[in-house]
Image 1 (cartoon, helix red, strand yellow):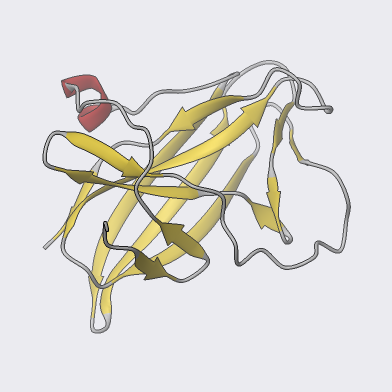
Image 2 (tube, rainbow, N blue to C red; image 1 turned 180 degrees about the vertical axis):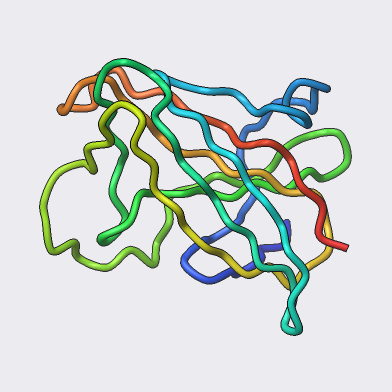
Length: 146
C-alpha cells in the first residue's frame, strides 16, 4: 500500500506519472496557452505555496472547476517518478456551473500550505473549448519543501 498525503483542498495519491526533466524543473509545461507557476514561501506552519495560473495565449481557456476555484492537482516526485494527480475528492458544489473561463492575459491565484518535505508540482486541466473536449494538462514548475 502506498502512502496518501492530505493537503488543504488537495488529495495526493499515487497514479501514473512521468519522469523529471530539466525543463519541468525550470519552466513547467503550458497547455492551451495557460502557464502554471508555483512559488513556495516559508511560514510558521509549513510552506505557503502560491499557484498562479495565467492565460498567456490569445484565446480564452477553460479550467476544470473544483467548487468555486480551478481544479489544481498536486504531484510529488518519489524515487524517479511523479506520483499523484488524482481527482480532488474535497470539491464543494460550485455556485456557478461549468468550467472557469480564463480570458487572454487573465490569471487566477490559488494558495496551498504544505507541511510534508519533498519535491512537488501542480497539474491543472485546461481546455480551449467550453465543453472541455480537448482538455490537456498544464504542469507547474517543480518546487521543494524542506
